[in-house]
Amino acid sequence: MTAQRALVRRTALSVTAGAAALVLAACGSDSGSGGHDMGSMESDSSPTATASAKAGDHNDADVDFSKEMIQHHRQAVDMAELAADRASSQEVKDLATKVKGAQDPEIKTMSGWLTSWGEDVPEEMSGSVDHDMSSAMPGMMSGKDMDKLAKASGAEFDTMFLTMMVEHHEGAVEMAETEKADGKYGPATKLADDVVTAQTAEIKQMNKMLGKS
Image 1 (cartoon, rainbow, N blue to C red):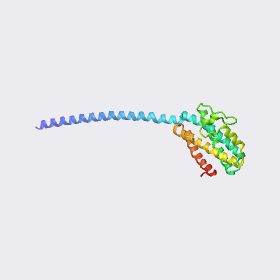
Image 2: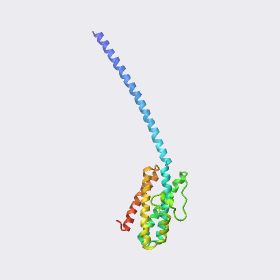
Image 3: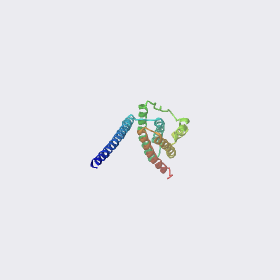
Image 4: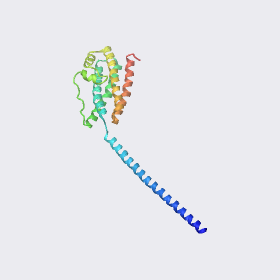
């Protein structure tokens, strides 16, 4: 009985040890596979993501936004320069100075992006903006609008300038919202966010100056 019991015990231990070895082997295989997968995921995502961020990835929406907003800003600057000469209200003159001061540097920034992307920077237009360009972008004034503004003066100019600039800013905000939704280039979407914030505040200020709020 003693010998038989010892044999049964040794057999049981042998089976247990074998099962444990199989379990450990399976775990080791799974762990190795999992570790490899995680390593692959990290090597696939982290370095690539970092490289892409450094490269400054952009898409067609970023290019369109930059090209169109450059033209849009240029017209706003033209309007602001008219205000410096023809406005009667110091408040309107101050607002015009603020608009020009903000949008001139943004034009240079966006021009730099386009150049770095191998894209053409839109040429400056001589004279009035044509109707096709004005209809292509929200808030753009037509050639007739700009001619009319250039001929106005005093209080009439102030009202006309503020009314037109509100519409112009609303168009810029619309364009910026599109860039925020569709753009890929971080600095461009950030600039778009800045445009929305700054120009929404100026729209409220101008409406107040017009007695609409």
